[in-house]
Image 1 (cartoon, rainbow, N blue to C red):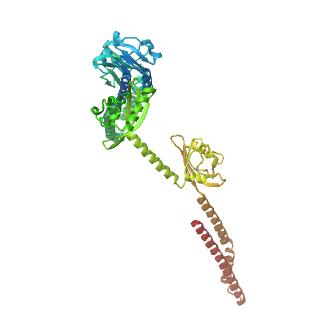
Image 2: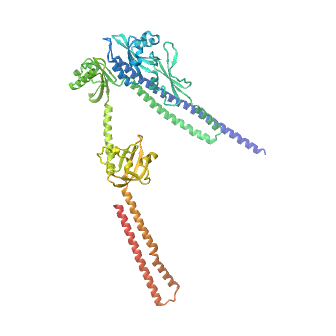
Image 3: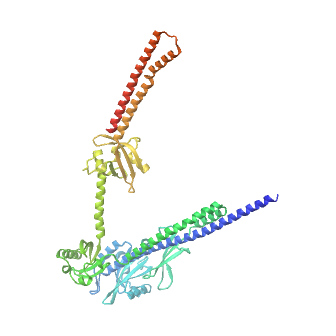
Length: 613
């Protein structure tokens, strides 16, 4: 009586021990998974922060070029500004995020675009204003572009101002400035609209006048999981926050609860689960390395303008240049600066450049000219755009397009190759709009439908006009395709000359919501099925003969044999009559069997001939 309670107590202790061990294993597993989860989200946060930073770098690079182009309209030597309105309009159209552009002499605003928005600030002196003076003076001291703000615009609104100081003979002349509306800046940079749920951004800066950190994003974020990125050239601070989802904590509590009630099988499952983080960590490492490599590549791309820039005088003489890659220059800088194109190139090429320069000066429009040069025994293709800076100078932006031109030629050859393959297919291949109007039809398709290859109005011909479904005669083909996305049906093709062709049609809807399909002529298959049906009718007839005509003489034979076996005292004359009847029934049975054999042979020969025909 003392044995059973002791045994139950041991079982209970063992059950508690197993529960505690499993709970401990699950607890360690949960901690590891949670730490890994935090690391994964940190990597994701870092990737998104880098992406926003790269977008801002791109905006700053394009804005630098815009400020530089605006600055080229200033002629400090004559103290004039030429073609400002035209250049400003072109730049604003190319960069829609720009709120406006300005020319300031010393610190006073003299030119603005668009005028109707910014006219109220003309005459405002930024160097005489405590709010703007410090950052404007920083740009002068730096002798380079500096982005002030975010700050409140005098004409209303809030935004960023990039000011590029202009010097003449080492003396400060003024600024060319670009204005970016704060809302547009946040949208184009991706700060205000994160593509990943739970990740948000905050844009801030230390106010140079108050030395206090100011936030410029409307949302106030509270999270201890964040990363910062600071732009040294402007003092901007981009902070990426990750907001923990309440569901994560709920899942953790649920797993802990399940761990307390788990068995040894739960422990084994946990062990198998622990293998997954190792694989995921390896995959994360590979993806992280790819992201880092891509970030390095993108960073190298935005460090400079990927074009050649030349400044010409009205005689097509080279005055200045900027080269992203010196290897793209036909001559070294010291060999072409100050020289005319006629001194450097053949007369035809030089004349084309000179004509583009003259047209840009006279028409005040952007002139385009494409050409190629053999540099280091390699042919390179270029596209150039010429724009008048003033009445004496022209700015040319030249881009190398060798790769895209060669790729276009290669693509054209590839498209022609696949068009030839489609045209030589043994089945009809078509492409139509979603409503069934034909767009493309190969050669076999034209032959089957009797639609002329030279028909220019093929888009007016609809699939439903010449394809009728066999099993769904009341439904249109296009309705069936839209309902199921794909279809494989037998149908009847009605050609232009009234011929009915049994076909099998296979269709699907493409990503462009068009219908792509193959039409196969199944007339030989249909004819073969009909021949099999005729052969079956012959076989039925033979079977009927076997079951009726053969049975009659066979029954007589069996009856006569039974008579001979049961009646031994029959006369000699009666025996002769019986034997004669047996012979007569056997001969009749032989005739029927020969007829069956002949019929069978004829059916087999007919089937054999149909198979090979």
